[in-house]
Image (cartoon, rainbow, N blue to C red; front, side, top):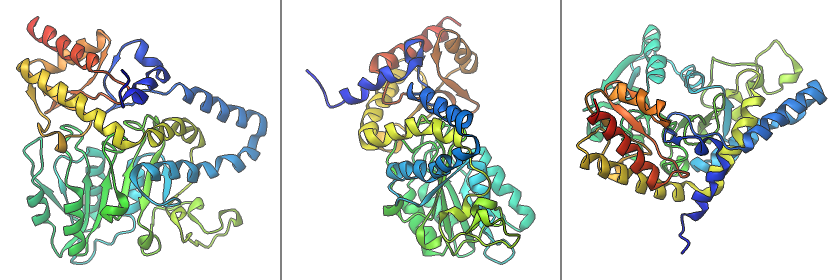
Amino acid sequence: MKTALDPLLAKRADFPILSTCTYLVSNSLGAMPAGVRERVAEFADDWATQGVVAWEKWLPLVTQVGDVVARIINAPAGSITMLQNVSIAESVIISCLDFSGTRNKVVYSDLNFPTVHYNWMAQRARGAEICLVKSDGVTIDTQAMCDAIDERTLAVPISHVIFKSAYIQDAAAIIEKAHRVGALVILDAYQSAGTVPIDALGWNVDVVVGGGVKWLCGGPGAAYLYVRSDLLQRLTPTVVGWFGQRRPFDFSMEPDLADDIWRYAGGTPNPAALYAALTGYSMIADLGVSAIRARSMGLTAHAVARAQEAGLRVNSPLDPARRGGHVTVDFKGAEAACAELIRRKFIVDFRPGAGIRIGPHFYNTIEEVDAVIAEIVAIRDGG
C-alpha cells in the first residue's frame, strides 16, 4: 500500500550519492540533486556561447532564486537578495547599525554558530556590548534569553536551530520580546530552512539569513538575506557595492542606494552558485517543508530511540517539537568512531563538545537510520 511519504522517498533516485553510501549528513552538506549538473552546464554554455550578453539572463537569477527561498520561509516575493555566505549577509546588516549610543547591547546565545559570533564580537571595536546568554550545551532557556533583552538592546542575532544539538529556539517569543523594547532580530535559519517550518511574515521577524549548503541541497555560494519591507529604506548599509545602487549601470561616482532589497546586494553576484542552487531550492519548495518536517521528526525520533537503547548519550532535545533535523550522540571515542564510520561509507560528522551528528533528510529511510546506529554500536563495542 502506498503512503503519503512516497513522493518524498521517490526522490531518492535524484540524488546520486545515495547509491554509493549511507548519506546522513544533510545538517552539514545536503546531497547534490542530479539536476545540478545540467544547471551548472547551462551556466558554462551561457558563458561560452554568449559571453557578456549572458548577464541579461544571469542577473535576474538573483531575484528568481530569492523568490524560491521566499516560498520556503514564507516571505513575500522580491524580499530576498542572494549573497555569497552568511558572514557577508550578517556583515551587511551589521553595517546598518550604530553602536555609539547607549543602545549598544547585542544579545544571543553561546550556542550560536561561530561565524556569526565572530561577526558580532568584531563590533566591540565600534562600541558594541556583547551579552552571551549561557546554555546547558544542548538547549537555551527562552526566559533567560528574553530577560537579557532590555531597553539597551540594539540587536538580537539568534540561530533558529542550534548547529550542535538541533535545539529549536522559540523564535516567535524572542522576536516579540525584542520588538517590545525596540530591538532588531536577525534570525539565522541555516539549520532550519528546508527541514523546519519558518514563518518570516507571521513572526514579524526583521531579518533572516541562511544558505543552501545544508537542508536546501543547494551547495555553497548561494546564501540569502531577507529584510522586512518596512525596514528596507530605514536601514542604510555601509557595506555596499555597485549592484546595491539605484542605477548601477549609470556608473555614477555618487552613491545612490536602491529603495528595495537590492540596496543590500553589494557587488557582482555569483551566477554559477545560483544555477547550482536552483534545483535543490525548487525541489524543497515544491515538496513543502511541512511534509519534510513530518518525515524528519519520524526519522530523528527513531534515531533517538535506537541510540538510547544502545546506551549512547543523546545531546539533542528528546522532545521532537524542540528538535531540528539532526540527532547528536556521544560516547567515549566518538571522534575516532566518526572517522571510521566515514571510512565504512556511513557519512556523518563530529562536532567537539557535542558528538556525532546524524542528519537524515527526506530522502533517507528508517533502515539507514537503523544501520548507522548499529554500526556506531559495533565500532564502540569493538574498541
